[in-house]
Each structure stands twice: as structure tokens, then as C-alpha cells.
Image 1: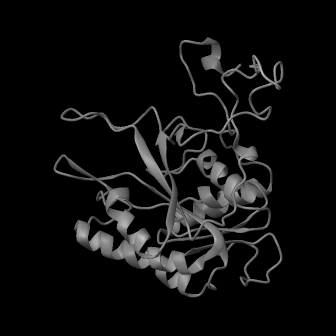
Image 2: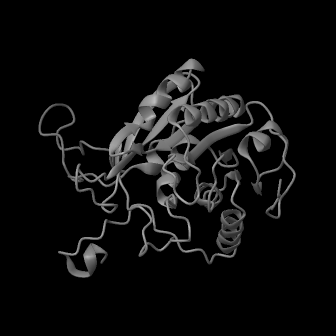
Image 3: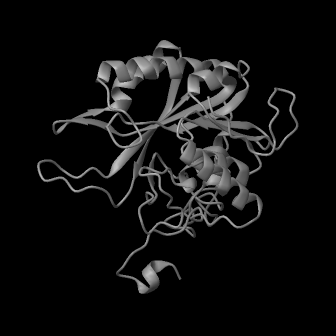
Length: 293
């Protein structure tokens, strides 16, 4: 097992704030060394078993067997008030799709977890299909261990459609009818995926946008909580955690990705990492400067 560590190495439940650790390691081996219920938020974008260069394609049954073991360890690590967010797409075989969140659902339920939302992540670009509709969404399945979980809506509110709308009649007549901080972003999130012209693009073919993870970090954790990604890739989850003062922990079996993650984390610490700002409008070619002001 090859180990590549960021500057702050020790890991324990009494570690001071500021932890940042990523290793080139098998995730089951890595997780075996972590304490029970020590992680507040687990966020990952797992391999989809598509046979791409960064993953070996296996039978769906074998894939689900592997996922069963990883999920069980993640549940062990998850704090009682924590959240587990599993981001998935579709397994495709000879043109037939299998929605992975549907086949993974029973595994999560077998651990007694409760689904809070099935978040639809919509993006505008991707591969074009000729024999079926082109796929333009994936899902984030948000699970908790019970009804008592950390949740903060205000940090992720989005601008209201009618921000100055007021009550027309009744005891609140004339007062603003909506929250002045904005509205709930709902369970459909339109955030650009990381393609060649994206500011965050690296060599990873299916890179997770930092902005997507930031919403999860801000709404499901408190400062200094620990965030973990068992398929860390080039470190987008860790970056989102560190941007907002959370501990960041991850592993990946690809040494090149881990090296890039370390470089990105170093750039973040130096104030040099460029990421797409949260809430930035989607580029619209019909508007001047794409609607970016």
C-alpha cells in the first residue's frame, strides 16, 4: 500500500481542528484503521462500473458485493448525527441502463439508514446518445442514521424568484412573504459538471465539482467536523471541506489522482486554487458575457 500524506498526519477522535489527510490506499484497508462513529459527513462519487480507464469493469453482482462491503464500513464510521451522501449515475450494458441508486437502495436500508433526499444533479453537457435520450442527470442519495441529524438550511439558500413578494392580506399584510436569506434550493440542483472548459478540470475523466460538495458540507456539518471520501479521486470533497473549516479525510487507489489532490489542497492553503463560486449563474450564450456580469 502506497501512502501519500498531507502535512497534518495524526488521526484520532481527540485530534485538534485542521486535519487534512489523503492516502493512496484501498478504501477498506484505510477505513479499517478509523474509529467508530468518528466522521460527521461521508461524501463520495463512486465508480460506476463502466469499464473506463480508471475502473475495471466487473459483473453487476460483483460490483454490488464490493459496494456492500464499503457501505458497511462507512456506516460504522458515521457519527450518530452524521450524513452519508452517495452520488451515483447509471450502469450501462449494451445500451440498457441500470440506475445504481435503485440497486444500492436495499443495501443502505439493511443498515437501518433513512433516506432524507434523493437529490437530482442536473448538468447541461455530456455524451450524446443515438438510441436513447442523452443522460443529463445523476443523483445524490442522502442517508442518516436516524431523525436527529445535523442540518443547516440557511448557508445554502438560493435567491428567491420573487424576493420582494409580500403578504397581500391578514396580520402579516405588507411584510415579506419569503425568507430574506433566500429560498430552499429544493432537491434538483443545476450545477455544471467538470468538462474541458471548467475552471477545476484535471486529468480525472469524471471529476466531482467542488460547488456540489460545498452545499453538502455547509448544510450537514459544523466547523471542525470531519468529512470523509472513500473514493477521493483528485480531492474535490476534501477541498470543499477545507474551504469551510472542516477536517478532510480521503483515500484513492490511483497514485496520480492522489498527487493531484495534494497539489490542489496545497494551492487551496496558499489561496491559489481556482474553483467555481457557489451560486454563480449557469452560462447562457444568449446573454451578454453569458450572464456572468
